[in-house]
Image (cartoon, rainbow, N blue to C red; front, top):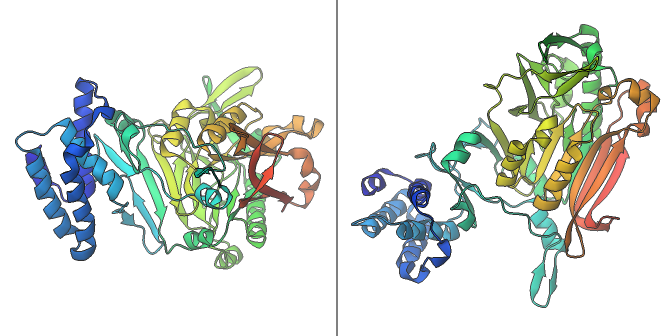
Length: 491
């Protein structure tokens, strides 16, 4: 380990090396971290504190070189679990997050997989939290009582990524099993990004949920069947033309309404619908706020179901591939969506200071225990779900994430999923938002459902979306408990 120490060049590789040693040791023999004698390692705390000071005075390289020499002396003649934990604990408490990711062009977006560079196949170091919209709400809405600060909601459940992660306050430590299970890419908007500036100045987030179409799936797509699976070979020309017109109209209305996150349902997109060759639309997009975002439903192509997230002006930020296949029932037979498993392994998070961590799932991903566990690990603050479903199975998962993990879940569904049933019974719950809430001292959840009967009469005039403004600086008492104030309207 001492030889490895001599080769590392930054603070997070030091954390990764020490973490790897600890995880390896506790894999052989359990360790009770509560027995750690902190006072025996005060000099380690001092060394890390000096690193933080010297870094601001003389730069990272000079400061880290001195710290590394001190840690090498600490580890001689043999490293130990306690020595490594002393290093990690001091860094966790003293060192502010430093991002070293790749800046994506001039977009003020940093892309990174982990804070460490070395040992990423064995251990991954990530920020545990960043300032979220919930923090700003608590700052305004929390109360002091008997010298104790009481937050608006109960504290979110912890979901550790490793045994060591349970002991960390500011950094996550993923073990090898978690690293392999969740290949990760994070897109972080830096302080100069228009969205960061926008949300720094407002306490509201405005969501737009779009049903998009009532045309049945089989009338839109060329569905193919193979055994007990189905796949899509393409969208028919006429529906594609109509959906593109609808997409352009909705995007225009969204801009006029000041919507921050516009969410389309699953499956109803093609590359042609998202093409930027429409001169009028391209001109209008130049006026679009770069602080707004579009969750562009999904495109089904080449055995992959992909959701593309763009800025309001159409610039792509990232893609997310569906994990959990849809089950299509036809003539009493169930057919599973045929998804290429090699294409849908990666997970994606977008980070915006002042908003938090934003995740994407697609339809049945919301009931996948593996997908939900990822968002629990990450502490996702807002989870968007483009969906195509006539089932309410996903509601329980959304409510659990909101109640236990303070995650806002926004599901946008399509009228198309209900077919003839929607025409006969126009009161189907198309979409919903779930918010964390508190009822006395207990955890609660607020459900805001959006029904088809509210807008289906207006289909002839173009798809009507639901505009939902969540005010994070004011509260409202609902039947289920106390939560953020919500103002709803059509757009």
